[in-house]
Image 1: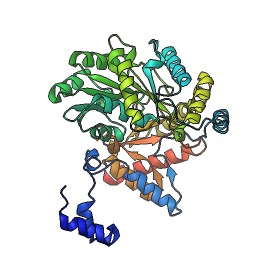
Image 2 (image 1 turned 90 degrees about the horizontal axis):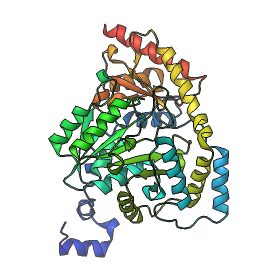
Image 3 (image 1 turned 180 degrees about the horizontal axis):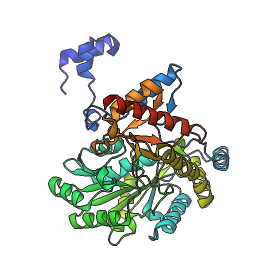
Length: 422
């Protein structure tokens, strides 16, 4: 933007606060990168904003919107963080992460997936979202297209758009149990010339665990169309049925797959912001250059806490996952027999997807009506893309004693809506 001499002198002599508003807006316009990150006029979080406003006003709301473990970080992990901090580990850190933490993550990945992994394949990031951002920034450039499977976590399209690339979705249909089809991926790539594909299993929001044949189909589509695969596996410790298969473990995929990991869900460390990318060494080296110019590393005492958490092994992971396994059964029992609500495929993660299409309402209409009538907040399926229309995502983050009542009220509300529309 060109600033003429007259406006420059006006700004120089009077200062920004005295400059006419219209001129200040002309002089101080921000770039278009942030507005362009929204794929539509909505960001998917409208029901969350309403819920927060009600809670702030003192209204009692049963909040089943956000996927955050309803337990604090383990005391042993907090003790390790505290000891590291007071012990002086408060300075700058090695760009890709503390070497010992990268080794521990690599060993965990090798043990869980069977794919030989070293520290050179790992970069530590400030949370899983930062890992998603870094992965796309490294792989995409303006003019490229990144694909993502929908239903999807709301930041997926905006993360892709933030790179300057275009984004396009591949629908996993309710009729297919929200399992994406290889032919749909190939068609999307051929139609857009896409360079990358983002998938998520176990899946948020659906709770689906991709079947082995689904993962194999995804891998085949990536190999055939020369796609990079970004595999978001932050829920890999929360599998209730079947088995989690990382696509990086399939033939020919380690060299074209980036795996996103995080301590948030597996170790109840959401506020610690500790995630990682696992991938080919040259990609990790490029992500390290990006980190040097963005985050400049991750808080060192938090990294020590993550190292302590990983050292506690699968016992801690199972302890944190256990409530969600129990609550999934509570939801299924509460919904059983309802004509208006049914549980969609839900084999993992800390969510259950409810199909409320029998009510005749969209997920958005139902969720806002439920919040008005019952002061129960759930996420409408449309927040996660059109493929989840007519569904609700219920976060299993309410104590076992309280969850049945909330579910019975949801079902009763749905039954009333269906009767009124019938």
